[in-house]
Image (cartoon, rainbow, N blue to C red; front, side, top):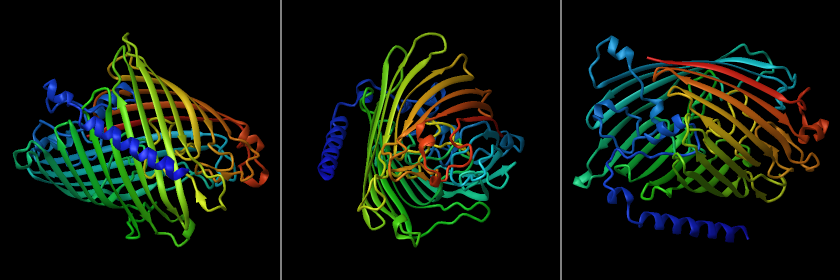
Length: 500
C-alpha cells in the first residue's frame, strides 16, 4: 500500500513538473527582464522581499556580487562594507565583519538531559569574518565563524547547535560563466566548504537564528536562464561540528541532490527535488541512515488583495539501520494580504511529519528533517525550539504587519500534537511507547518585533508562552521529564546584530 502511494506521489509530481515547464513562459510573453524576482511566500514582508531577490542572475557587476550569492539568501551577504571603505580597498576585494549578541531565557525545561529542571538563561554570541577575492570568472571566499555561549551552569542546554568556537564556515573557489555558448544561460561551479539554502529552507539551510551554522564540503553546480528557471546539483560531505575543536567531515557520510526551480507561471511557481543521504559514521547500526528524499513544492507570491498559498510534499524511502524507512512530510500554507496601511498579512499553516509507532518492528516512519531550518515558521530555536519536523501534527495562524519601512511585527499561534502518540517527541528524549500519554503537546503564542535600522544594524525581540498539553501530565515517571517540566514554559529573547 505504501509503495502504491509512493508511486502515485511520484507520478503526480512528474506530471505537475511537466505541465509547468512546458506551459508558455509568462516572463517571455510579458517581456520580463532578468531582474524579475523569485519571491517566496510565508514570511514577513521584508523577508519575502529579501528572499525574492535571491540571485538566479544579476545584472549588477560580477565584481559587486559575493562569491556565495547563488548559494544563500541575499540578506546573508549584502550589506554596506564600512571596513572596506575605511581602508580604500579595490572593488575586487570583499571584506566584512558581523557580530550578533542574543540574550535568551526560558523556564520549566522539558528535555530529559536537563535533570535539574532549572530556568536556563544564556548569552549567545556569534561573530563572522568574510574575506573574498572577486574576479570576472573566478572568485575566492573565506568565512570564519565563532559561536559562544555564556551564563551557563551544569545542566543547562549547550550543544553544537549553540556552541562552535573558532571555525571555518566557508572556504571555496567558484567559477562563473554568464553566457554559456551564447545561449543566454549562466552556470556556476563551487568547490570547497560552503553553506547552502534550497527552496523554503525546510531541508537544507544556512541557519540564521541558530547560533551555529550547517556547512558542507564538496561541489555545487548551477545552470540558470535568468530568473525563469534554474537547476542546482551538489555532492558533499556534511561538516561535523565540534564545540571547541576544528570541525571535520567524514567519508562515511555523503549527501547529494538535484534541485529544479521554475517561475514560468506566476500562480504556480514550482520546485522539484531529490536528495540522497548515506550516513554510516556511527558504529551503532540502528542510527545509520541510507535513504532518498523526493520533494515537490509549489506556491504563489503574496500580493495585496490576493490570496497566496504554498504546498510542499516530501517522501523519504530507504533504510534506517537494517530496517526499512518510509516517512513523509506535508506543509500547507494559505494567506491573504490586506491593502491597508501596514499591509497586514494573515496566514494559516498546517504541518504534518510522520513518526514511528513501534521502535521494535521492521519499519521506521520517523521523518528526518535533514539540514533544515525551523525558526521562520515554528518558533525561536537557539536553546529553545522544542518542535521539529518529525512526528508532529500542527495547525496554526500568523499575522504579520509592517507599520513602517523598518519595523515588522508578528503574532503567531500554533497547536501541537504528536503524529503518533507512541513515537518520540522531537529531540527531547521523551517517548511513551505505550501511547498512554496521548498526543496533546499544547499550543504556543508568540509575539515578535523586528527593527532593521539599515543593512548594518538590526534589533529583534520576542516572547513565547507554551501552554503545555496533557501529554506532559500523563507521562510516567520513568520517561525522565525534569522537575517542573509539566508546567507551562515562558521564553524571551532580545538580540542585536551589527555589520561592517
